[in-house]
Image (tube, rainbow, N blue to C red; front, side, top):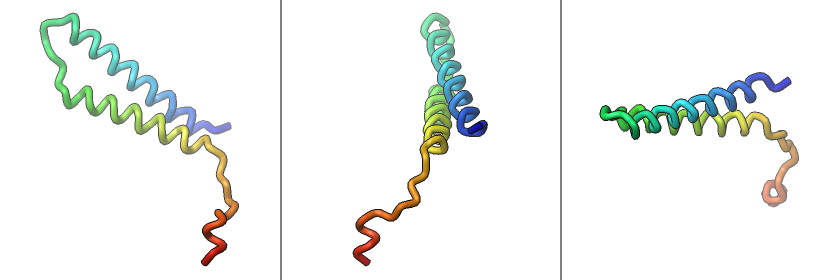
Length: 70
């Protein structure tokens, strides 16, 4: 079972949900969350989800046609 990729996907999704909750709270509250925190949550969540998806992809060990030219 691919435990690590699924964990990365879930962690990234939870980070993005936290970002949405912070931004909704920011829109309804008089205080502002730091833009840096929002950027870290957005980029971190996206990076974790992309990493999890990359680990879930099957590997193709065949060589490309360009490799046979050399």
